[in-house]
Length: 93
Image (cartoon, rainbow, N blue to C red; front, side, top):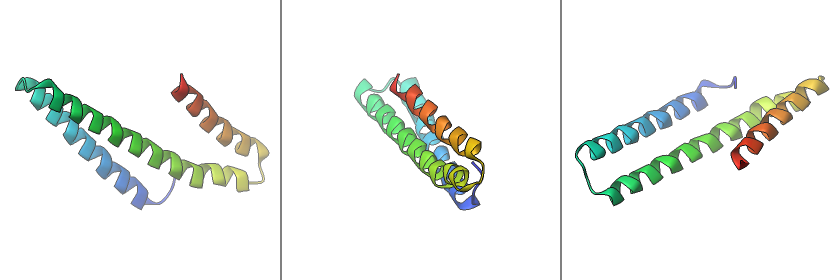
């Protein structure tokens, strides 16, 4: 995905927050904290990752796939669409 730096900066900030959450769960486990708060944090991390995934997919669709569709190269358009379809197939399994 090659696009403006603003999206990449935002995505990097999100992943850094997620890294902090994961470290926090590690600390909770080291301290042998009660399981329910740990599980709650894991769910929050999973939600944050899903949100990040959707944002990146959205950017990919608006930039990379759109670029393929607007090009004079039907093979590029088909390739970009197939990439997304293959990704979606893997997430359904």
